[in-house]
Image (cartoon, rainbow, N blue to C red; front, side):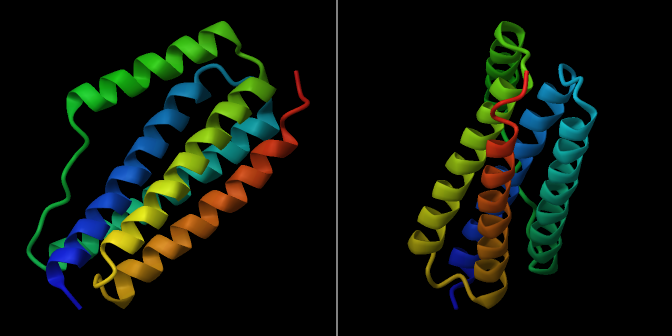
Length: 147
């Protein structure tokens, strides 16, 4: 195990989950379908759990998790607000969240490969998050035909 690889993979988990939470938080302002809103709240809570677990592991190693930069967060918020303002439909918001989950899954898979010496904890946490995001993609597809 390489501590450097583990730290980098844990940072990627924190970044990925933080961006997912922010995107969900932004779209929830425009979601009026209660069932869909509930599903998004569940996803947001699970993303927060992944982030907390990765942060806790980093703290155990005496490290702090890097926060997404204000420019990145600001660009995400603007992009999400623009897309939801244009559509606002459950199906279109679900598709936007599905694509975000897909990007997150792809990024984590690349990170696992890149930081292959990360050790069991970080690698399994990343795989657990991948499974979660892939499951979310399927759930979001179910909302694809709603108004």
